[in-house]
Length: 385
Image (cartoon, rainbow, N blue to C red):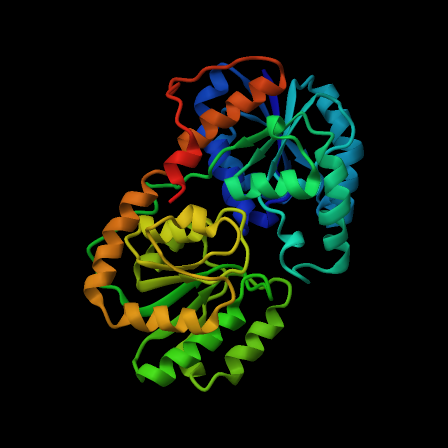
């Protein structure tokens, strides 16, 4: 097959979708001897794909098409022409934001979540309108759709009206070579890795919970945020400034991929209070690094965390503060959660994600592909607690 992959929604490598694209492309490289891959990348993003340069054809997209509106237009007009020029059999769009209407070849799209239907004001009104109405129409034009959790599959059926036969649940994986435990002594830190997005990521709720925790325990624990500024970041900055414990709250800014595992391992606890996620990769990355996790139940987070995390209902500030106090005071419980988390995280493998994605490409083209790993395991049975 000739397979095209669009990568222009990776936001210079600083988003969860970027990690999805990077890891999927990396694990598809062994199949480049059998299939031909064409990767469409914005000019300034091309160095991020140096690892694929020798195995995949990289087609440069002019930087003028980076802004969202122009990028959408490029996908609907220029990309179909490029698909025909390269005689692609199938095109994979790894986000619902750029799904195609034309049919220059068979189309596969990945839908990570339908958060606009669950979190009010998650984006500006234009993005909310696009996610709720335009994306729904575009989804019906795709030949196959990949969803990254059972939760997202249910949402796509409910809100987009896509039949189950077109949906393929394929879980994200983990880079276990990077995200692994060590023997160092972590510090008394609650770490949260997520872009500074308000209200969706619920940083303000976590700051409120931290304030209650500090008032009740008078402990030396600190709260560390890692991530780039996003929509509504000013609300989070204001909450940090107003906190009576602001001296114990720190924001690192964006942390490069190479430094992220060490950051996880430096913390005694990882906290993920997001209101809604289609998957939730950071809690699993923390588990793979041997860090106990407190996690909300928003969206697919209960599905992903299983029984390996201390769960709190999304938006329950008092419950979050109580879990923080309970685990901060119990090193033995944290040690037990560390072992449970390591075992749970081991289930998530990017290699398996790539194998199953390649099979979806084949189904879109009317082929029945097999890979080296043909063992059939229902993901819902494997991961659902």
